[in-house]
Length: 277
Image (tube, rainbow, N blue to C red):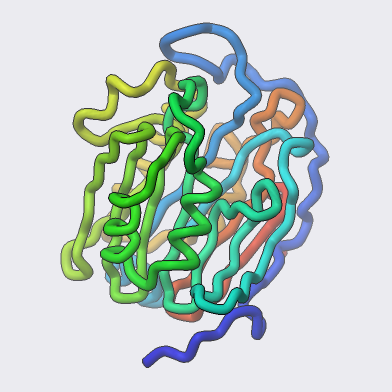
Protein backbone atom coordinates (compact mmCIF):
# COMPACT_ATOMS: atom_id res chain seq x y z
CA UNK A 1 0.00 0.00 0.00
CA UNK A 2 1.32 3.43 -0.88
CA UNK A 3 2.02 5.93 1.83
CA UNK A 4 -0.41 8.87 1.46
CA UNK A 5 1.91 11.87 1.41
CA UNK A 6 0.85 15.42 0.61
CA UNK A 7 2.89 18.55 1.20
CA UNK A 8 5.79 16.88 2.96
CA UNK A 9 7.01 18.49 0.73
CA UNK A 10 5.58 17.64 -2.73
CA UNK A 11 5.90 21.07 -4.33
CA UNK A 12 8.92 22.55 -6.07
CA UNK A 13 8.50 26.09 -7.37
CA UNK A 14 10.16 26.99 -10.65
CA UNK A 15 12.11 30.24 -10.68
CA UNK A 16 11.60 33.40 -12.72
CA UNK A 17 7.82 33.31 -12.48
CA UNK A 18 6.62 36.84 -13.22
CA UNK A 19 4.05 38.25 -15.65
CA UNK A 20 6.32 40.61 -17.53
CA UNK A 21 5.29 40.46 -21.20
CA UNK A 22 1.85 42.03 -21.51
CA UNK A 23 1.77 42.23 -25.29
CA UNK A 24 -1.43 41.98 -27.27
CA UNK A 25 -2.14 38.66 -28.89
CA UNK A 26 -1.53 38.16 -32.61
CA UNK A 27 -4.29 36.68 -34.77
CA UNK A 28 -4.67 33.52 -32.73
CA UNK A 29 -8.32 33.51 -31.91
CA UNK A 30 -10.66 31.72 -34.27
CA UNK A 31 -10.55 29.28 -37.16
CA UNK A 32 -14.34 29.03 -37.46
CA UNK A 33 -17.43 30.60 -35.95
CA UNK A 34 -17.55 34.22 -34.77
CA UNK A 35 -14.42 36.34 -35.30
CA UNK A 36 -15.04 38.13 -32.00
CA UNK A 37 -12.30 37.93 -29.40
CA UNK A 38 -12.80 36.02 -26.21
CA UNK A 39 -11.13 36.55 -22.83
CA UNK A 40 -11.46 32.90 -21.88
CA UNK A 41 -7.85 32.08 -22.64
CA UNK A 42 -6.76 28.53 -23.27
CA UNK A 43 -4.91 25.59 -21.73
CA UNK A 44 -2.72 22.69 -22.78
CA UNK A 45 -2.27 19.45 -20.86
CA UNK A 46 -0.78 16.05 -21.54
CA UNK A 47 0.07 12.71 -19.97
CA UNK A 48 2.83 10.15 -20.60
CA UNK A 49 2.84 6.48 -19.50
CA UNK A 50 5.81 5.00 -17.64
CA UNK A 51 7.33 3.20 -20.58
CA UNK A 52 7.70 6.51 -22.45
CA UNK A 53 9.41 8.50 -19.70
CA UNK A 54 13.09 8.70 -18.82
CA UNK A 55 12.67 7.85 -15.12
CA UNK A 56 9.83 5.35 -15.45
CA UNK A 57 7.43 7.65 -13.58
CA UNK A 58 4.03 8.93 -14.71
CA UNK A 59 3.91 12.70 -15.38
CA UNK A 60 0.77 14.74 -15.97
CA UNK A 61 1.55 18.25 -17.18
CA UNK A 62 -0.62 21.33 -17.64
CA UNK A 63 -0.37 24.99 -18.66
CA UNK A 64 -3.36 26.99 -17.42
CA UNK A 65 -3.88 30.06 -19.62
CA UNK A 66 -6.24 32.93 -18.83
CA UNK A 67 -6.34 36.59 -17.78
CA UNK A 68 -4.44 37.13 -14.48
CA UNK A 69 -7.19 39.26 -12.96
CA UNK A 70 -9.67 36.41 -13.37
CA UNK A 71 -7.66 33.84 -11.39
CA UNK A 72 -6.99 33.30 -7.69
CA UNK A 73 -3.39 32.02 -7.99
CA UNK A 74 -4.02 29.86 -4.93
CA UNK A 75 -2.43 26.42 -4.63
CA UNK A 76 -4.34 24.47 -1.96
CA UNK A 77 -3.78 21.39 0.11
CA UNK A 78 -7.19 20.04 1.09
CA UNK A 79 -7.69 17.70 4.03
CA UNK A 80 -11.38 17.16 4.79
CA UNK A 81 -12.64 14.25 6.90
CA UNK A 82 -14.34 11.66 4.73
CA UNK A 83 -12.66 12.72 1.48
CA UNK A 84 -9.31 12.03 -0.18
CA UNK A 85 -6.50 14.47 0.60
CA UNK A 86 -5.51 16.40 -2.49
CA UNK A 87 -3.41 19.26 -3.83
CA UNK A 88 -4.85 21.50 -6.53
CA UNK A 89 -5.24 25.06 -7.72
CA UNK A 90 -8.48 26.63 -6.50
CA UNK A 91 -11.22 28.37 -8.47
CA UNK A 92 -13.98 30.43 -6.83
CA UNK A 93 -12.33 29.48 -3.54
CA UNK A 94 -14.07 26.13 -3.04
CA UNK A 95 -13.67 24.82 -6.59
CA UNK A 96 -10.58 23.05 -7.95
CA UNK A 97 -8.86 22.98 -11.34
CA UNK A 98 -5.76 20.78 -11.81
CA UNK A 99 -4.17 18.55 -9.20
CA UNK A 100 -3.69 15.11 -7.66
CA UNK A 101 -4.74 13.24 -4.54
CA UNK A 102 -3.08 11.01 -1.97
CA UNK A 103 -3.81 7.82 -3.92
CA UNK A 104 -2.08 8.98 -7.09
CA UNK A 105 -5.09 10.09 -9.13
CA UNK A 106 -4.20 13.04 -11.35
CA UNK A 107 -6.84 15.37 -12.86
CA UNK A 108 -6.19 18.12 -15.41
CA UNK A 109 -8.81 20.14 -17.25
CA UNK A 110 -9.42 22.73 -19.93
CA UNK A 111 -12.44 24.29 -21.58
CA UNK A 112 -13.74 22.25 -24.48
CA UNK A 113 -15.88 24.87 -26.22
CA UNK A 114 -15.18 28.29 -24.67
CA UNK A 115 -18.07 30.28 -26.21
CA UNK A 116 -20.81 27.68 -25.81
CA UNK A 117 -23.59 28.50 -23.35
CA UNK A 118 -24.61 26.12 -20.58
CA UNK A 119 -28.25 25.06 -20.49
CA UNK A 120 -28.82 24.35 -16.81
CA UNK A 121 -27.43 25.62 -13.52
CA UNK A 122 -25.82 22.53 -12.04
CA UNK A 123 -22.13 21.55 -11.69
CA UNK A 124 -19.41 23.56 -13.43
CA UNK A 125 -15.91 22.25 -14.12
CA UNK A 126 -14.43 23.49 -10.83
CA UNK A 127 -16.99 21.52 -8.81
CA UNK A 128 -16.46 18.44 -10.98
CA UNK A 129 -12.68 18.54 -10.50
CA UNK A 130 -13.06 18.82 -6.73
CA UNK A 131 -15.47 15.89 -6.62
CA UNK A 132 -13.10 13.69 -8.61
CA UNK A 133 -10.06 14.58 -6.49
CA UNK A 134 -11.93 14.22 -3.22
CA UNK A 135 -13.98 11.13 -3.97
CA UNK A 136 -12.00 8.90 -6.33
CA UNK A 137 -8.84 6.81 -6.04
CA UNK A 138 -8.53 5.50 -9.60
CA UNK A 139 -9.39 6.42 -13.17
CA UNK A 140 -12.08 3.73 -13.13
CA UNK A 141 -13.74 5.31 -10.07
CA UNK A 142 -13.47 8.79 -11.62
CA UNK A 143 -15.19 7.68 -14.83
CA UNK A 144 -17.96 5.98 -12.84
CA UNK A 145 -18.41 9.17 -10.84
CA UNK A 146 -18.62 11.34 -13.98
CA UNK A 147 -21.50 9.23 -15.25
CA UNK A 148 -23.56 10.14 -12.17
CA UNK A 149 -22.87 13.89 -12.02
CA UNK A 150 -25.23 16.56 -13.41
CA UNK A 151 -22.75 18.70 -15.36
CA UNK A 152 -23.38 22.09 -16.99
CA UNK A 153 -20.08 22.88 -18.66
CA UNK A 154 -17.94 22.25 -21.72
CA UNK A 155 -14.72 20.59 -20.55
CA UNK A 156 -11.80 18.43 -21.55
CA UNK A 157 -10.27 16.21 -18.87
CA UNK A 158 -7.21 14.01 -18.71
CA UNK A 159 -7.30 11.43 -15.92
CA UNK A 160 -4.41 9.19 -14.86
CA UNK A 161 -3.59 7.09 -11.82
CA UNK A 162 -0.65 5.35 -10.19
CA UNK A 163 -1.53 1.99 -11.78
CA UNK A 164 -0.89 3.48 -15.23
CA UNK A 165 -4.54 3.63 -16.30
CA UNK A 166 -5.53 6.81 -18.15
CA UNK A 167 -8.49 8.40 -19.91
CA UNK A 168 -9.32 11.31 -22.16
CA UNK A 169 -12.77 12.76 -21.39
CA UNK A 170 -14.74 15.37 -23.33
CA UNK A 171 -17.89 16.85 -21.80
CA UNK A 172 -20.61 19.01 -23.34
CA UNK A 173 -23.09 19.33 -20.48
CA UNK A 174 -25.01 16.02 -20.50
CA UNK A 175 -22.95 14.57 -23.37
CA UNK A 176 -19.76 12.72 -22.33
CA UNK A 177 -17.25 11.02 -24.64
CA UNK A 178 -14.49 8.85 -23.16
CA UNK A 179 -11.34 7.27 -24.53
CA UNK A 180 -9.86 5.03 -21.84
CA UNK A 181 -6.65 3.04 -21.59
CA UNK A 182 -5.60 0.20 -19.32
CA UNK A 183 -2.10 0.34 -17.83
CA UNK A 184 -0.60 -2.01 -20.41
CA UNK A 185 -2.00 -0.13 -23.40
CA UNK A 186 -1.82 3.53 -22.38
CA UNK A 187 -0.36 5.99 -24.85
CA UNK A 188 0.49 9.66 -24.59
CA UNK A 189 -2.65 11.77 -24.29
CA UNK A 190 -3.17 15.49 -24.85
CA UNK A 191 -5.94 18.08 -24.75
CA UNK A 192 -6.37 21.78 -25.46
CA UNK A 193 -9.60 23.80 -25.93
CA UNK A 194 -11.55 21.97 -28.57
CA UNK A 195 -13.05 18.50 -28.95
CA UNK A 196 -11.30 15.71 -30.82
CA UNK A 197 -13.18 12.54 -29.82
CA UNK A 198 -15.75 11.04 -32.24
CA UNK A 199 -19.22 12.54 -32.02
CA UNK A 200 -18.23 15.71 -30.14
CA UNK A 201 -17.73 18.22 -32.96
CA UNK A 202 -21.45 19.07 -33.09
CA UNK A 203 -21.26 20.40 -29.51
CA UNK A 204 -18.59 22.95 -30.31
CA UNK A 205 -19.59 26.41 -31.48
CA UNK A 206 -16.07 27.68 -32.08
CA UNK A 207 -12.44 26.58 -32.13
CA UNK A 208 -9.81 29.09 -31.07
CA UNK A 209 -6.81 29.36 -33.31
CA UNK A 210 -4.43 28.97 -30.37
CA UNK A 211 -6.19 25.73 -29.38
CA UNK A 212 -5.74 24.17 -32.80
CA UNK A 213 -2.11 25.32 -32.92
CA UNK A 214 -1.39 23.94 -29.41
CA UNK A 215 -3.02 20.62 -30.30
CA UNK A 216 -0.84 20.26 -33.38
CA UNK A 217 2.27 21.24 -31.42
CA UNK A 218 1.52 18.68 -28.71
CA UNK A 219 0.71 16.04 -31.31
CA UNK A 220 4.07 16.53 -33.00
CA UNK A 221 5.93 16.60 -29.69
CA UNK A 222 4.27 13.49 -28.24
CA UNK A 223 4.45 11.54 -31.49
CA UNK A 224 8.15 10.96 -30.84
CA UNK A 225 7.18 7.86 -28.85
CA UNK A 226 10.67 6.38 -28.69
CA UNK A 227 12.18 9.55 -27.23
CA UNK A 228 11.37 10.51 -23.61
CA UNK A 229 10.49 14.19 -23.29
CA UNK A 230 10.95 16.70 -20.50
CA UNK A 231 7.40 17.84 -19.60
CA UNK A 232 8.58 21.05 -17.95
CA UNK A 233 10.59 22.01 -20.99
CA UNK A 234 7.53 21.58 -23.20
CA UNK A 235 5.45 23.81 -20.91
CA UNK A 236 7.89 26.63 -20.28
CA UNK A 237 9.20 27.33 -23.77
CA UNK A 238 7.24 30.13 -25.47
CA UNK A 239 4.96 30.27 -28.48
CA UNK A 240 5.47 29.61 -31.35
CA UNK A 241 8.03 26.92 -30.50
CA UNK A 242 6.12 25.38 -27.59
CA UNK A 243 3.12 26.01 -25.31
CA UNK A 244 3.71 29.09 -23.14
CA UNK A 245 1.72 32.21 -24.04
CA UNK A 246 2.29 35.71 -22.62
CA UNK A 247 -0.48 37.85 -24.13
CA UNK A 248 -2.04 38.65 -20.75
CA UNK A 249 -3.90 41.78 -21.86
CA UNK A 250 -5.98 39.66 -24.21
CA UNK A 251 -6.56 36.88 -21.71
CA UNK A 252 -4.15 34.47 -23.36
CA UNK A 253 -1.35 34.24 -20.82
CA UNK A 254 0.03 31.26 -18.91
CA UNK A 255 -1.14 31.73 -15.31
CA UNK A 256 0.43 28.60 -13.89
CA UNK A 257 2.28 25.52 -15.07
CA UNK A 258 2.39 22.24 -13.20
CA UNK A 259 4.06 18.87 -13.73
CA UNK A 260 2.58 16.19 -11.46
CA UNK A 261 4.56 13.02 -10.68
CA UNK A 262 2.04 10.32 -9.77
CA UNK A 263 4.77 7.99 -8.48
CA UNK A 264 6.37 10.40 -6.03
CA UNK A 265 3.15 12.34 -5.35
CA UNK A 266 4.98 15.59 -6.06
CA UNK A 267 4.39 18.60 -8.28
CA UNK A 268 6.70 21.11 -9.94
CA UNK A 269 4.80 24.39 -10.05
CA UNK A 270 5.42 27.72 -11.75
CA UNK A 271 3.27 30.85 -11.53
CA UNK A 272 3.38 32.89 -14.70
CA UNK A 273 5.03 30.44 -17.06
CA UNK A 274 8.62 31.45 -16.24
CA UNK A 275 11.73 29.36 -16.70
CA UNK A 276 13.23 26.89 -14.27
CA UNK A 277 16.67 27.48 -12.82
